[in-house]
Length: 71
Image (tube, rainbow, N blue to C red; front, side, top):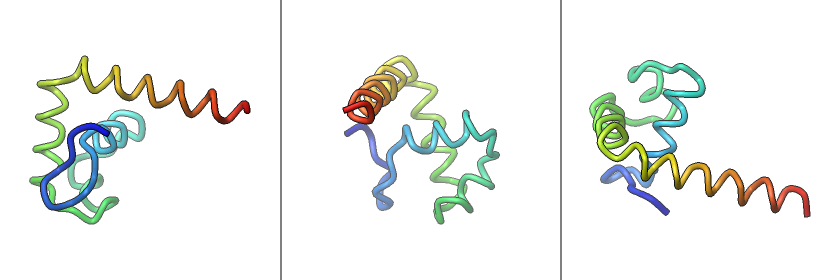
């Protein structure tokens, strides 16, 4: 399922997608998910360090969702 922010149950890739696709700042992302800005910065730092692995997971999930959406 991917890396999860400690104490939140929110996946790092969820935060990364919000920041990347919606163009949200760390403060806006924190507000959107009801978490601290420090959590968002931690998630984005983790994403930066593991970008290829996380992007692969995101692409695989999107492909799976697209496949199931067509069924």
